[in-house]
Length: 255
Image (cartoon, rainbow, N blue to C red; front, side, top):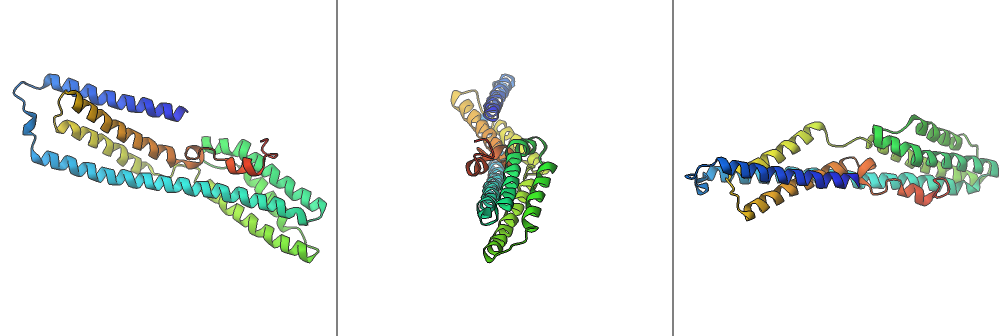
């Protein structure tokens, strides 16, 4: 909710700034000024800047959206793999089965209640989560199958724990924003130039021109917000990042 409030305030401030600058600029323009005398080269440059910036902004949005989709898939893979581990441990004797399931529940509980807020604040997973996952993996790998059925289950558990480990590593690597600072500098600078070129066209104080300038500014502000929102998918881009865990493990997560 706070993100969308920030978006509305940003759009309102941007539009207000453009309209204010336009009105103040018009007060300084002399009566002999003719806006129709804008050189053709300025119109051409404005068009080219708009096209180039639109391409760059579109690529940025596509990139962060792809990262958001990948993050969603990694979370689903990790939760599903852990769920398979917990369910397939049914083939083990009671003591080994309960030990594996206890480790899975402890890891899932820590991931949902502790690690996810930590990722949102610090941009990385926790050492405790790594220790819990290592304990689960060691518990599985050190078990000595005694029957053919247990041997098949052992291999299946090893495959699933490998998938969960792969997803956890991807989650750790994707906890920080994906776009580097230089890209953000280009996006913000490009937005300032694109909006600034509106004044190069010598817009007047007519209601139609002010509305168009405000809508143009609001559109750019909204698109930049989308890039920022999806740039960190594990902390902002997913509606409920831990939904896969809470759905498959309602008891472990308190659901």
